[in-house]
Each structure stands twice: as C-alpha cells, then as structure tokens.
Image (cartoon, rainbow, N blue to C red; front, top):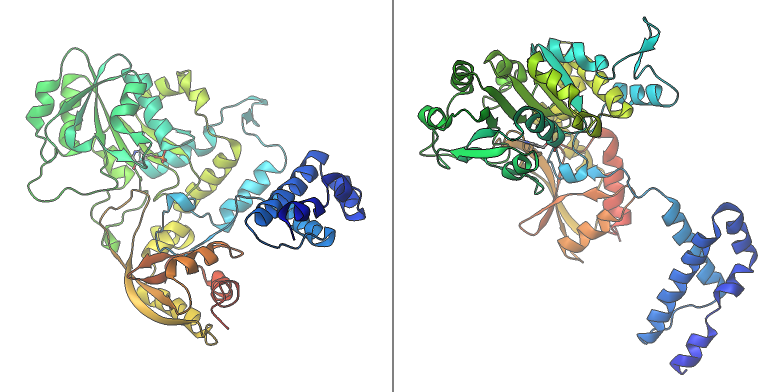
Length: 465
Ligand SMILES: *Cc1c(COP(=O)(O)O)cnc(C)c1O
C-alpha cells in the first residue's frame, strides 16, 4: 500500500482519547502527560512507516504501547543497579551503599518532624551540626567540626572563608583534577584566592614553601593525590613538617584529604592512607574529606580542625548555601555511630569497608554460587576466574584488590550487546568488559543479588535458549 494511505490509517490522538482505556488514564494522570505519551507512540509508528516498515497500527496495539510508556514515565528513573564492576566506590553508580541501620534512621528522622535545629533541653532554637559534632571530635581527635553537602563544597567554603584575596601555597604535584569538574586551581580561583604554585610535578621541597611565604600568604594547602600516584624520582614535604612551618610563620595549614578514613587501615595492609586522626595529630588546622568515599556514608563534606578556623566557616554566608540537609545528616550521624564500635565492627557493618576488606574466599564462594545457578545457559561460556578489583572514588589509588569474577563470553552476540541487555534488565546489572569478555565481579555483588544476576543473564539477556 502507498505510504501516505498507510499514514492516514493511523488512529488520531482524539479518537484514541475517546477509548475506555484512555478514560481510565485520564482519571489517574494529568491530561498533558497522556496526550504526550500517545503522541510519542504515534510519532514512532509514523517514523517506522516512513522507513518502509509495517508496524501494527491497530488501536489495541497502540494503546498497549501507550500503557507501557505511561508506566515507564511514571516509574522512578533513578533506580537501584547491581554493581558488578568490582569498583567499590563507584561515583557513577552512587558511591557508598548504606547499611540498614543508617537507612532506618533516615526514614525515622524524615517521615515526620525532627529536632534538626531545635534544642529539646532548652526548648529553643538549636544548631543542625550538633548531631554529628561530638562523634566527629571523638573519631578524629579534632577540636571542632562542621559538615556541608559534599567535599567540593567543604574545600570551596574553607578557601573562601580563610583565604579570599590572599595567597594560598600549593605544591605543583598536587594541583589535581578530581572527577572532571573539580580542579584545584579552578576552585581556588572561584574562592577568590591567589594560587602560589611551588616545586615541580615530581618534587617539592620544604625550601620551596619557605621561599613562597609572604605577607600575603593566608594558607598552605595540601591536597591528597586521590586518583593517581607519582612514582620514581619524587619528593613531597611531610604534612607534620609543613604544619610546623605554617605555625612558625603564622599562616594556616589546610589538608584536602579527599577520601578521609576514620579507621587505621594498616592492620589490613594499607599503608598509604593515614586516618583523619593521624592528620589532625600532625597539627593540620583544617582537614576536609568526603562522607561517601572511604567513610562509607551519604554524600557530604566533613570539615574538622581548630575552632578558630571552623568558627569562621560556620559564620561565613556561603555556609548556608552549602548546608547539609536532614536526610543526609540522619544518614551521616548513624554512619558515624557505626565507627564508635571496634574497628572490626565498623569494617563489618559499613558496606564500603566490608566490600574492600572481605576475604577472597568469601568472594570466591559467591562466584561459585552464581556459576552453579547458571547451569542451563547455552548461549554463553562462563567460568569463575581470578582478577583484580579497584577501590574507585579517588581513594587508595593503585591499591590492587585480588578478587573473583564470573567471566562471560556470549556466543550469539557481542559482549557490548550483552552489557546493553543487562543494562535494561530489572534491576540493571553493570559489569566490566575486558579482553572480549564480560566480567561480573563478585566483590560488589551482594548475596541477595546473585539470584537477580543469574536471572538477568539467563532470561532477560537471553543467554538460555
Ligand atoms: C573526591 C575529592 C574531592 C571532591 O569530593 P566530593 O565529595 O566528590 O565533592 C575533593 N578533593 C579530593 C582530594 C578528592 O579526592
């Protein structure tokens, strides 16, 4: 049939709106939404016909597609995903997962009213930071603390409040970029500070800092090299030595720690990530770090240090613009409480730490369980294999974590096609592609998710014929 004639046979929006099913929708959804959903489906049919296709244009079939479309539009787009990448602090997948105790506190605090800024003893206005203040002092040994909505904001606020219009000395080896949109020189410019770079990419000496100090210096800033490592002919000045210099010369010293760890990781073989308490003990005046990296809590920025600095941050007008909200605060407080137990308990209860330090045998037994649940698979070759997972999130760069993966090689599609199908599964599963195999890393897959992964592979991605 002639294309124009076929196009004319497509039912109109008005006629479709008169059908009983559409009446049902109009009682539930706003009219604009229903009209748009119908319009989108009709446009797709038209496009298909113009390409020479012969789609089903019966009202029944169109309405059924509209129903799917309405369901898709009104379902949440932000949804749970199974992280099979093995990257524990995966910024694109939401960084730190939270444990049940933490989530329960978020629900309890936010489903009704709370004492967010109300002092129950005094019966008058209180401060929102008090809920985490004491825990942060306890865990970091700092004199004072406050929290904001992420670490980028913590750095921005600190620089703005402590060094606006003044010079800040930073080693050239630490002028880093984190996650594309956070670059130390740019944050510095936005905060109104004057950047004084010292040293070279690989080496910065104490004398470099000494020579750069002037009447206009407000701060010496140290930035954690979160997402890379410089090896070979390198030198940096120990933070304790820098603190001493700053004190002698009457300037501030600040450390953007990035990840910020609250437990001593040395018993676990990690010697590159000092705890926040150690940094404070070395005399740093202001330390900033993320709540959702190694700390394993909600997105937030923690600032700890001396009262003479932290008080200036609290008083600064920007602190209102970057203030933490109550859901985050509820999650952060409950996360910090997990750290008041023994280090072993914290590692067990905080998902990020648990995933990082779980024994290889535990990961392997999950891999074996997943493999044995896949016995019926005919369209792919699978095997359990050793591999290496990453910490991610700009924490512990270069630390290699031996892990166990399910290596999947599809027989009737490419690995890219397989990953696309898994991304459309419910819930979506995101793995990593390596050497023409899809690797599903069991470090970041929970026990309770194995069933979903196996169903996603066999049924939703069609690997079982
Ligand atoms: C991650 C990171 C930041 C940014 O922290 P967010 O919590 O993502 O805002 C800043 N500085 C360093 C060194 C980092 O590693």
